[in-house]
Amino acid sequence: MREMVRCLYGVSTVIYCRYGDSLVTGTGFFYNKLSTPEEEKPGWVKVESIWLISNRHVIFHEERFPDELIFCMRKKGDSGMVWEEIRIGLTDLQKRTKLHESPEIDVATIQVDDLITKLIQEEHEKTQNKVSSYVPVSGISDAEMPQRAQIPIDVGDDVLIVGYPHGFYDKTNLFPIVKSGIIATPWDLDFDGKPCFLIDAKLFPGSSGSVVITKPINIKVEGDRVMYSAKKKYAFLGVYSGEPYLERKPIDLGDFEIVRKESFNVGVVWRSTLVQDLISKP
Image (cartoon, helix red, strand yellow):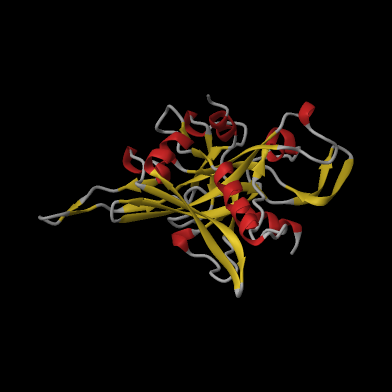
């Protein structure tokens, strides 16, 4: 499997949040907090912690946590890929989750490295097989942050959005849907005074919490030099949050009203630096 496909395959997961009898579906992706440079060994970097990233409105729907959150690991089964569910109860979820103090910031981070490690260790103890059947988590990391990726970013640039619209995805390979768009507002300016920017892309519900990255490249131009990388590189831009709508005057039908919404066909993306800020909070 090609390197880029492997990365997109392992970075994302479908999320289910159970609120009583209701089930909210969304998208999440993994973020690896790496060790500081002075702690690194040649060729290897320690993963300090693994975080599940999604939207506040998915994890904290209507300002309350779900009774249970479920995310999944991909596992090689006898007849193909299968989901292995990891369940987090209400009390444990509250302890693991970090939200921004402003309810407007639609980003949520949940620490999950111990849950993933436990799953793999239990498999090893049960089978005594050193090769895990779980697909490795190839999470976004500090190395893909825009300031470190050294990839030029500007309005009009291509982006990829990796998610599970309406829970729709490849049920055989458990591969997410990768959609494309462009950056629709100046990258170096916050849209409407908030730490976000807009992308020109038509996405469906269930895509909330998707990772947004630059279109991977292995050739770039710096001044009068052409730079090449054997491995395609990309920058982690942020977390997709949904579409803004224009609400028209409600239509009164007596017993109920119909509210007509018009889409601008753009999406809100909260900046990737918010993820770093949240997981660094004590």
